[in-house]
Image (tube, rainbow, N blue to C red; front, side, top):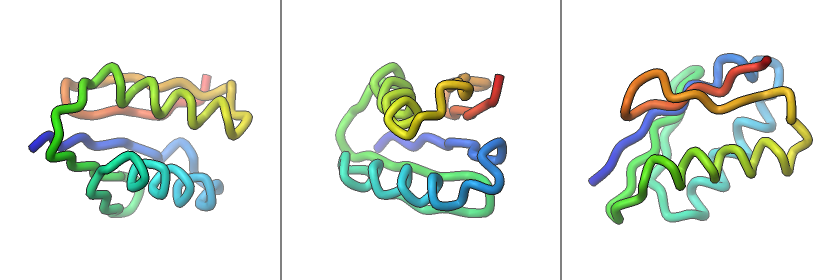
Length: 83
């Protein structure tokens, strides 16, 4: 089972976007839980980190948030950061 953490603290004030991202991850087959400004996504199927990063990037683009980027500060976590 793969587990990834997504830090959404830079999306403060955009709680509805965090909820939409959570729902999209659930739709992709992840078991999702949220604690504060961090989303924990677990998957039984092997999903590559690159695919997850691309999925988050597509979500940001779809929501019109081109000023945000997805960064990997550690091998099992992602950070959404405003440029």
